[in-house]
Length: 186
Image 1 (spheres, helix red, strand yellow):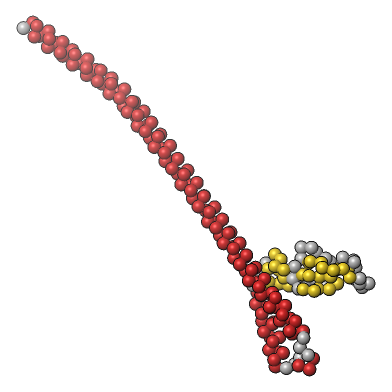
Image 2: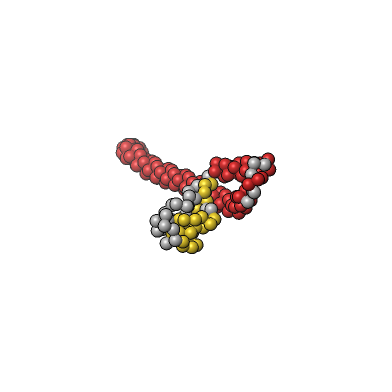
């Protein structure tokens, strides 16, 4: 029996030691568990921050893409409008030549008045679209707007001034569609 008592006592002591170690381990485990979860939480926080940053960057890239495509679309519209205006300008030139060649005796006729009204309507519509004629005669020569094709002598105007407009130039929204073809005073 003594052996049984001793082994029972040893078992009891071992159980107490195991309980004490378990309680110490439990007191250490919560810290370990906390630190373990904390590391996981930090890792998740890092992932969340990384994904948030990626989303913000993609949103910024998309916004830049949208702005760039809008700008390109506007430029394409400008190019297309200029192309159409360039094709209309010779028609306007011919219209002006036709109106200038009307004989004086027919100047007040219904036909001449009708043609004048159509010309004015066309020019009004172009003006509303942003097309404007370039001022030339009497202005100082400006290579951005004028194309000098000849020089003339003129005592009434200063040197470098446009004396005659051979072909009217036009702008579209502040950019030149066609330069004025002019004669400049020497």
